Length: 157
Image 1 (tube, rainbow, N blue to C red):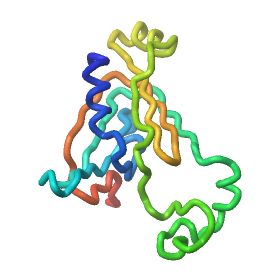
Image 2 (image 1 turned 60 degrees about the horizontal axis):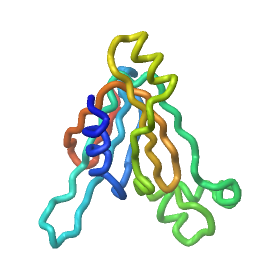
Image 3 (image 1 turned 90 degrees about the horizontal axis):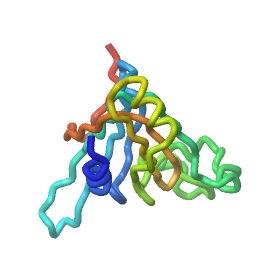
Image 4 (image 1 turned 90 degrees about the vertical axis):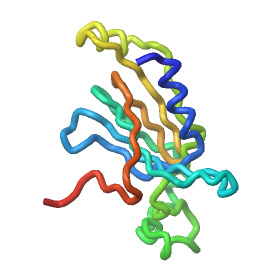
């Protein structure tokens, strides 16, 4: 996958809403589900997009919420929007994170070189930053598809 094409695909979701991320049920690929909207005047309908990072050999997620905010955000009422809306602290219950400052392709690293050499296909590293989390993925390919609104990647059998 060409790095410029990858960068363009990631630019298209700048400042949208991440509603889910995690490894797929078969545990090889990593998906990021984005709810994308546009100004209603454009006539572009909202869409739920699945960014599937294929052959994902590493996924790191860390909080970007500062410790002082965490300290005042431990109340379980904050995991529900209705009960947390009037409390001080970070309201986790909004159930989405703004994709800001956004996603970018990182420069080639020792890790990407090692995986490329070991497996025989190109690997890339991407950093996805939201208002609450930083996600770093090491993968080979990216596929984007539309999924139904409310898409649930894991369903009970």
